[in-house]
Length: 268
Image 1 (tube, one colour):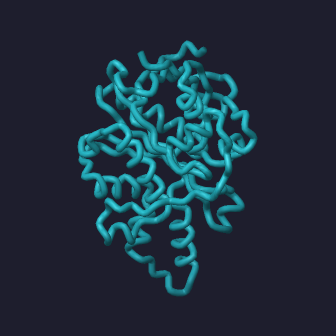
Image 2 (spheres, helix red, strand yellow):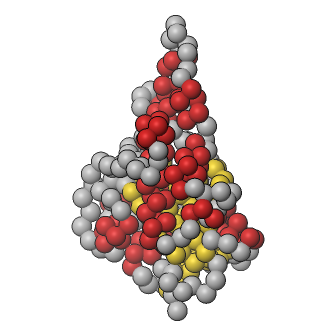
Image 3 (cartoon, one colour):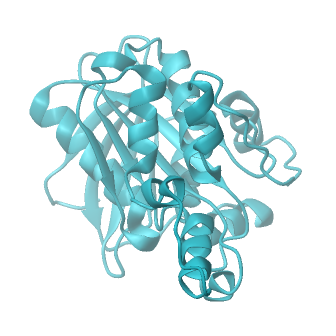
């Protein structure tokens, strides 16, 4: 494995939502060898938001919050004091499309709701409203490297500040004509509650470093297609290792010539 500096942390809980993967237990069963039946992602309403904010949320915000809230519940974490890292390859593509269409029309009047949903950290703002979180929330974008960038950011923050951090990586499809250039087929989100400490009640310990090795591929053809087609789903090899509950290493997509080596150790 790579001799570059390493980041380590414990995975306390996972939340997941994707095509045919409605939550982490169902996804874990599939990733551990169960049958996979791809179905369009169904994104639930975020009931913990006040009614006015709930009506203003778009697909991407509901997607991110759904995965984050699942990880939060499974990890029994205090959201009000939990720093978060949001990672998405492009944010809300549908909202961007609607704004562009409006600007290209004779009216050119953009609604305030569309405007405030256009910023890349919109999901972080709604997360604060939904959970009462007051800790720092970072939002980043790294195109196809967004999950890897988010994992590095969350682990670095966890290690430097000696605190648990919630990573939420998410992507959703674009409408035409953007879809022909950026063909993300469906919505996918993963949330990982990462923490320092001794690993009690954790799923596994991660050790992450840079490597030039090729990315780990999924053996199941349809899961591999999902991994390749949605940036947030680059997390699937790591999630599969967590689902199997056995130690081992995977390589996650990151930059063109640098990827992430992730060693997964089971809990003591």
